[in-house]
Image (cartoon, rainbow, N blue to C red; front, top):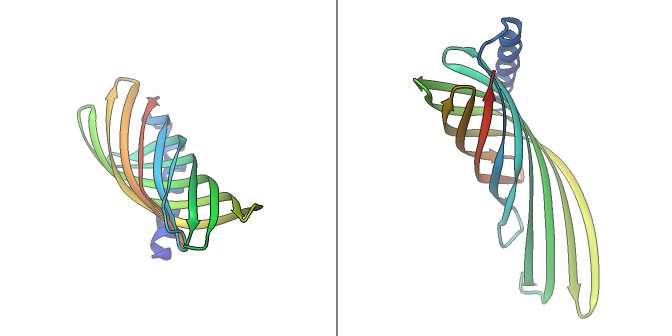
Length: 189
């Protein structure tokens, strides 16, 4: 699977470069909201995360676009009597994902449907505070992971402006963000 993702990355970057070289008439920048459920091994509960993203994309073939997306998510989790130990835990998770995506798409006039396949690099920071018997301890952990993203979306363009909605899944080695929902707008130029 990693070979397929690496090939997808190379094709996406080459396509974006080719489109720029050809002065592509179908480029866009986007901005929107994203929300996901974070699940990590060892947590009894999922963390609901919310944030935003920005993106830049270019259609380098009639049916294929490449996109670079940077997203930000944050969420909190409060567990009383965590894992049945009597310890109260509060965790705040912050994540930044950088994605390189290939988007095969089909358009009917201003409406389009598309798939998504790409690589994602995730930086996370988890602030955990635990208390037991009046004693409170806290710790911050940072991590990064390389994974992949697959998904689908729909878009509608009103001339130079458009709206889009997507659902995707992000898979990393020890955890995942699934499903990730995003809705946003974009400017086509």
